[in-house]
Image (cartoon, rainbow, N blue to C red; front, side, top):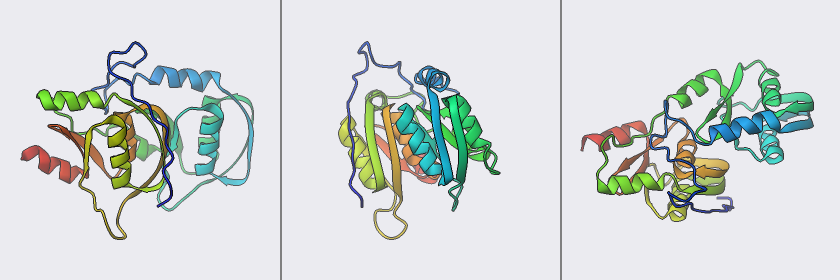
Length: 235
């Protein structure tokens, strides 16, 4: 495993600088960071040339570093799309639009859970409709756990085992995060993800990505696949 590099801070709910709470980290819920990201998309200006078939994954990292905006690329399986574009005094929004139209993969971007997500349209549709398993009528333990989803975190994972990423985030937010994903063998899921100034809920949303999800069950946050979460619900 490559080293984990992370910075962190935790914002207690109720502090004036804290964003309003996002209880349901899924479709149909307001994202308090969306206004800030939209402003950055229209005010940040880019002067940069991506040449020599630079992989889209690297292009996204460069833009994230230049603009200090959470920009994530959900890659098409088995592919890293080469990009050749010359951006002259353009806004970040225009730059992303140009990059998405540069290839033949029908890419687009959208603001989803604290980040600008670059992906193909089917992937964006799935992410817009992804809903973690949150209790509709939380009891006392679940209510306390739900509050923890608002704690702010900064982190960077490089080819990190999902289990270790969950343990790291649990330590930041001082909450119990349980992973029921495999811990050993070739199928052990790994993650490469860097985000800043996001809530724990947003971090878990993107950490679990397309294949997995998370839910709140009593005092625990459980990371699993949708089948595992469904089984927990019926217990």
